[in-house]
Length: 298
Image (cartoon, rainbow, N blue to C red; front, side, top):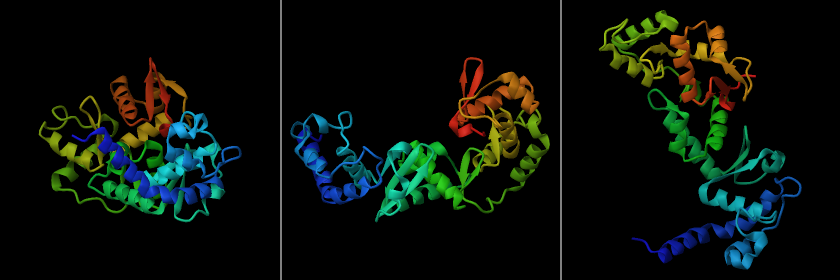
């Protein structure tokens, strides 16, 4: 068991390894911070001495003053590889010229990476999305260790570069997918013909076909609904897009409105909305659904 004293020593050693680089990076970050948020790297001395020596204006995040902000952000970049700035907090043109730094614009602000961590995080995302069937957002966040917004910003960059692509809820490497076996190809063709009626093992296909249908889901070619029905991915994408088209984040709609847009019966519209909720496209509030930022199509 590691004692508290040993833990403190290890933490201090980790900090000591990056502290020499902090003042220069903090000074560089000042140019990127908006008016009233800049400070001086001398705040580092308060951090070294601890909260008691730093005084009330330098006591951690809650009592953080303007001078401490670039220092904290520099420490985050050097220790974990990245930090984030809110949109109103940063001047993007100031970040573009920083040496050894990569800035990526996201929906919620600007994310700043060291060059080494930028390459490392991107490699992890590409590697994870490159497995058969790709990966959903939660898998990519777990594999990279990034926060949700920072992960989204890097994924958007990779999509723009055509390094990654989206297939419904999954991120994949572009290019031809894995060759399907005879049974997989047969069932995929059946899914396409079935359209919104879908395929349900034990109802319109033999029960043993369920395993192959699950394989198609893992390959990103099909999706399963909570009623046991399987749709081809293209069917799900078309119907979910019909529900979301023209809707802004925060907009509310009823089940009846979703039915009108898709032409689905209640038997199918509820499982569709549940699937969209699982993928963070919408959330349920009572009898209505609310469009989440990820599902906005305005």
